[in-house]
Image 1 (cartoon, rainbow, N blue to C red):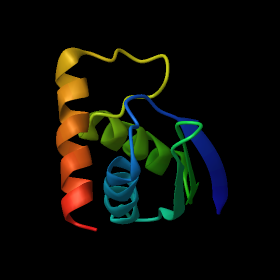
Image 2 (image 1 turned 30 degrees about the vertical axis):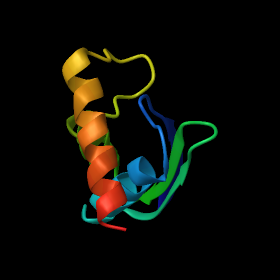
Image 3 (image 1 turned 120 degrees about the vertical axis):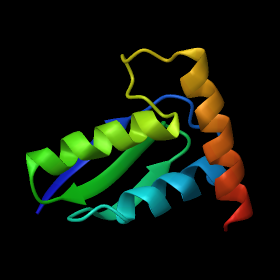
Length: 90
């Protein structure tokens, strides 16, 4: 099992964190997901590099692109939706 910390964009609150944790732990081989809202970082355990690629795609799909990636208006809008869903489904 490997461990990594990924810095993402558009992380606003615990609703965002809740959505990220729920969605990433659904992925096979991903565990130990934690979100630090103060540093915009997500730490997780993964088994293979291919799973890490899947995680990065999931971030973008949810509206939380990696730092350095394009942060378009549609991605920002997706992050607001993900945030709201995370607040509702606590």
